[in-house]
Image 1: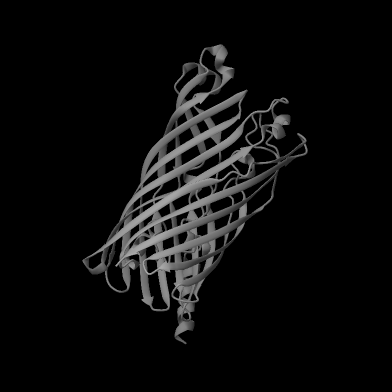
Image 2: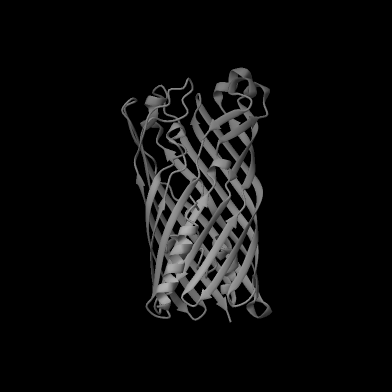
Length: 413
């Protein structure tokens, strides 16, 4: 009976927060354990990646921990256009991100402080210019985007009592944005930027069979500064120009539950929401050069019109022994970009994601975590924009993504 009541409470909570996250420019899963559990981690948040998922969860760490993990994201996109006779496949590049974290419990573990350094967001794609020559007058150009954010997050959490914990972090964002495209001739740019944000979380343990987590991240605006180059501007005497561009990552919030129905089994559910409509309406680039302002536009606007998106996530873990645990997960990730602005350089696909993971205690103080996910994309058939200046690429778009994460955690007695 007690378990049935707990399940009913959990289902009610899941329904109550089901207006809540989607991918876009953000990475889907941070850390090998959460990745293996489908990123359903807000209500569990019991390892070194809690700084990202739910800062209150670091109160689960009752000993000093130092951890490092690396994630390799490998996207492969396809683009077909009957209108232009194109059947292209992107390069399967490896986008590798290093991450570290460390925590120190104070006041008998009720107060925990720490520092995380991790990559929460990124987007990358690169195409073979020879396969896109029908778009560019039979001349092969470079087509590539590379966007990444590295966060440095000091975090603090306090266990009020055995039921309630709260936590918060300051998030310092370091961003990079590289772009290559036809526009006209070979347009190339590179920029970096910095921004500030914050995160907060609550972890509630009303019963030994149930955890409840709530997590929130502020909107984070990064002002990028860089240099653009285009030989088409040579006649105007300005083949290069410095520029600025604001890129914002949206307000993010979500809720999750963790159920412990039987010994050694954990089941998690998350609902997560990103408010892309508030941040990704358009990207505005302001060039310093008067010649660029006159010929390219002042400012130059790239319309996106992204919409809010929600993810629903499920995860499970079974501990076969004190040394070995196995994990599985699933989540649905809807595309935030509408057909009218979909571009081969900013792929936005709806995914069904399937995950698996495991952990093994190598020694008493050293734990190895592994996670793997495969995001199966749903093909999009997009009609070419008929505006005077087309803002999308008409045709069939799809992307599949493989992500692998490996981590080591050292615990000090």
